[in-house]
Each structure stands twice: as C-alpha cells, then as structure tokens.
Length: 309
Ligand code: SAM
Image (cartoon, rainbow, N blue to C red; front, side, top):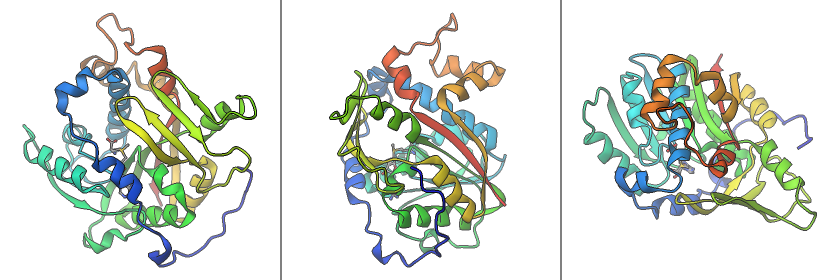
C-alpha cells in the first residue's frame, strides 16, 4: 500500500467492468429471516452496535426533509433510521434483486412511514445511476453502508462508484459510509506466522489467498461472519487511496473514525445514549452486552463522511 499517486484517469466506458454477480448471488441467496429470528442470532449485539453506528452517521449528517440515496441498500435495514431522520424521500439501489424486493416490501409495510421511496436493481459499480433516475435529481446525502469495499475489486469499479456518488449529490451534499479498515486487517495478517493466511475468532474469519503482494485494488480476501456472511469475496479499501480518489471526484473528507472511537465519541450524547439502550447495545446498568469476540469484530470497521465541494 505504498503507491502514492493515483493517475487522474477520466471515467472510461463501463464496458470492461463486469457486473459483480458473485456478490449479488451471495446476497440474493440470503433469506430475510425477519426481526424475531434476527433477535435470536448469536451476533445480535454486533448487529445492534453496527445499526447504532449507522444511526449516528445518518443522524449527524442527514438534512431534515432531505433527499437520500442509499447505494447497496440491501433489504432496507436502514429504513427506520431514514424515517427517524425525517427525510423527504429515498432512492434505494442494490445489485441483488431479492434484496430490493424485500426492501420495497418492508418500506410499503412500514408503520408511521414519513418519507417517499423508490427501489431499483442496479449494479452501482458498473452502471450509471442516471440510467434509472433523472440526472436532474440532486441528493442531499448518499450512503454506502458496508458496501463500498466490494467496488475496490478494480480501480474502474471504484471510479464508477465515486462518479455515481458525486454526480448525484448537490454541491455541499454529504457522502457517508462504513468500510472495513484495511490497516487493521493487514496488521492482523502480518502478525501471523509467515505461511498463515487466515485469522478468526468465534464470530468471523478472514482468509487471504496470498500475502506477498498488496495491490491498491483487487486485494481480495474471503470474509465469513457468523449468521450473516458466508465466505464472500471482499476487497481491501486502502483508505488514503480511497480519499485521494474521492478528492478527484470533488469529495472532501470531513470525518473518519474507527467504530470503537466513534462509539466513544457519541456514547455519552443524550440522544445517542438513549438509542444505545433502546437498540439494546447496552443494558440497564449501562454496560455493553457484546461478547469480546463481537467487540473485536466491530473494531475492524471505519465510519466516514465526505462533503461534495
Ligand atoms: N447497506 C445495507 C446494510 O447496511 O444493511 C446492506 C449491506 S450488505 C453487507 C452489502 C450490500 O451491497 C448487499 O446488499 C449487496 O447486494 C450490495 N452490493 C454489492 N455489490 C453491489 C453493486 N455492485 N451494486 C449495488 N449493490 C451492491
């Protein structure tokens, strides 16, 4: 990860960017187990914690009555957060058809819904969003939660993704998201004996195919997360590279924190403290309910925000 300059390539046609089918197939094959089953999951506190982190990012950067774009929205896991944030309207996009159907259904059945929404199947890493929504629609906020790292399969995909973000944001608009922290992951990998390519705890495992080369794009590893992700290919996001690339698309970094630091920053703020209780991240005594292994797994992520110049 030592390369400094990223050539300022103009956006090429997407004919070389092949759609990310294996990721789509992975998410399509996941059945929506519903709230009750999710509550029984062994990673319930990790899920709640991640949801709380996303609530903080959305709450901190959303504009009341704003227009929101959720790229890689999945099954609509953030719909309640958007509702609480009082947005006016949401466009949700995802490559997985089944997830988009679930999100649409979840939105249409939502009680106390206060925002309009539309959902579309789209490969946001290879296709231009303007192919499905008018380019005159400018969003106040774009969100990519636990999703952007899949685009780091190639530089072209990362560029198409950032181009989609920036061309659809108004000037001054905000781009928020969450990604695995490549530094944390690579440090872990390098702490292993030379021939070892895998590290894990009872919640997750990360397996590399090699540890000789550290390319800035396409640095693949296989990720398993108990009850959630079953050995799915993911790609390291070298943050300085991401930041430099984003800058080329007029996006200026305004916030970046590892989840644990973000937690420490916001956990005492009254509103977010209450959310920690209601989302059951902490119990009545104010102690967090996560196992050590869940806590370790949450530590590998970063929350970020960019502002469009
Ligand atoms: N953002 C949701 C959340 O936080 O609950 C879902 C996160 S899930 C870990 C990653 C999502 O990214 C999946 O729904 C997957 O289908 C979506 N995704 C992966 N590649 C994509 C692509 N090329 N275009 C759009 N969505 C994609």
